[in-house]
View 1 (tube, one colour):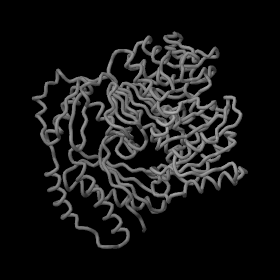
View 2 (cartoon, helix red, strand yellow):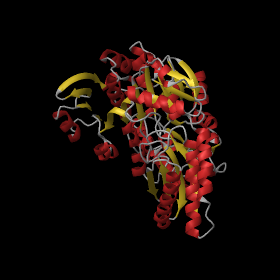
View 3 (cartoon, helix red, strand yellow):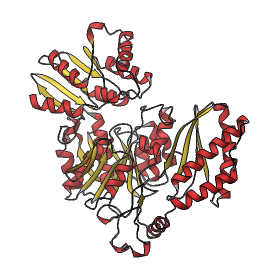
View 4 (cartoon, one colour):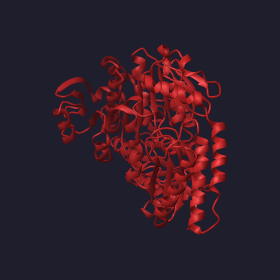
Length: 561
């Protein structure tokens, strides 16, 4: 049997395999060999765990071309648990292939010694005391904390107090929302931040753009994983925590909190993106990953227009708030008739929040600037999702309305998301859209704008599949653009050779019948921006899909407006 260990890591929260912390290994192997390897691993890890006096709880996940194997472990012994998991895998492969197997008694002695060195009894006592009091508990390599936001206390993992000495009366939780989905996550948490500020409270926000508390930027970059969530939840200035939660962090470590520790969790939508990574081979597997977030929230907000959300609603055991752009959505109508909460765009273009038959909030979609008088349909959906979450955070209607009326798709409120500039008579649109789902929604809006000529810039990160590059190219074809600029994303090669991704995209465009003279390939997003502006004439519409050099592009455009 041939196999390859691809990853050996710790799961610190609910994850795609199960809800427990513990070690997991990802193995690449032939599908026909997976059952034999799993069975042999189960035998060996069970013998090892029993020999060390550990309880035995095992889990596995099969996926095309691979297998994940995990077991439950205490939060203070996850590193030695990872070593034990790899030992059982190596021993299983050796046994199957008839090679010399490692000595079990030696392994038990070595791992027992490592376990004693890694064990941190005060950590487990604090974890138990927090659970008994219903308070939040967070741990990582360096810190342990209880409570959240203004009600949190944090200590070095090496200098922990005894649980009995903690002033538990001073510990409390702050309202917390977690937001996931393929598209719209960052816009939604930014809009929620505006609602919290309008209410006079201090928001803490983690997102793919960075970390913010109030108006202070703590750090820039992608903080949409559990590390970003912990940073915000431990900040003593935070009144309300808004945590963007991307699939990458959920797959690598699990979600950033334990089960049922967020007031509300939103799954905004599910569409193909990042397929082929971490064993996620298709959109159904991606949807299963997004739905891990259902374990976090006391209330779950779901998109009734998304087939993957509708299909998996049966997995949700908490109250659901549905939202829909369709006034006649049957699922939403039934939900309302049964006395439940839902948000719907009714036929008069009014967003209404229903609690049973009672209307508890309403606003015209045309009164929300980022919808561009209703033309940006995806931002109507994002607004509804944010309203649903805000209400579960107990933000009052007047503050929700104020934020919706004042939040704009500009470089101040929502940088990189549908930012529109007027430059020398041409309309220039900058957006982060980078997958077919997002591009299709964006193109539907842009095509409604009158234009003498149209231009689009496209590119993609190198860790996607070739089929993803082709689909983005086809979105450019379907946009009706008169000129297409393919730009290299230098910061996102991710294993590809320079020029490889643009070459694949150009081939797709030529194969779709786009003539060579309508295509240009450039070395960066800044070069593509400059070339687009050189080409533009009054009356043209330019759609600049800008990702890795967003700040440089926006700063340049702001300087010439």
